[in-house]
Image (cartoon, rainbow, N blue to C red; front, side, top):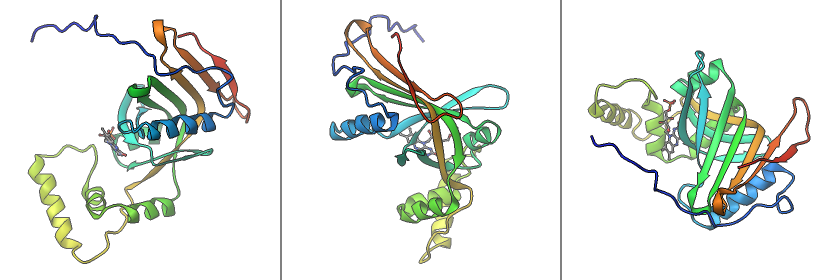
Length: 216
Ligand SMILES: Cc1cc2nc3c(=O)[nH]c(=O)nc-3n(C[C@H](O)[C@H](O)[C@H](O)COP(=O)(O)O)c2cc1C
């Protein structure tokens, strides 16, 4: 394969600026304002976020999931508790989230700790999902090796038959996680690579957020 060279791939970031005076002093409110704008702009998948976990040997792992809810107590997504990420979370509850919205030249970094949400909340959301999604969650052994696609399709066909005319029960291996942030960073791309960056950090056991502008 020939070498590829992307050194000349570049664009300017001119969508907006982020000033200290316009920044909300509550990072959740700031996140909310940016998320509202992202939804209004109809950008692709504004709720898609990278979740990074770290396994016992210190190896980081990242993957995209969909944010389903957020409030001042955290950011919620759903997954398989016995997946690779689930195992990593069991050994290390420190995680990082990342949103990248290229249409708006924005990146949001969030760091914090993760925990499972209450079972009833997972059950409630599971019951609201489309039947196909419920069945896929029910049969999937996420992150395990499978022989081929036919195996997956066969498992889905069997479950479809087994549950014909019945509700799909919430499988205990599937549910929500909530990330409780201790750090946020809002990044707004600017011309000449002089980007705006504001970091909110929360010293241990303190409610108040420290806000700093960071060098790009
Ligand atoms: C746009 C997008 C959305 C996704 N949403 C989810 C999700 O909400 N939950 C989930 O478990 N996996 C989701 N995935 C799949 C994950 O990226 C990943 O493949 C899966 O969770 C297994 O990760 P793991 O083996 O590291 O545990 C999504 C992938 C993409 C690209």
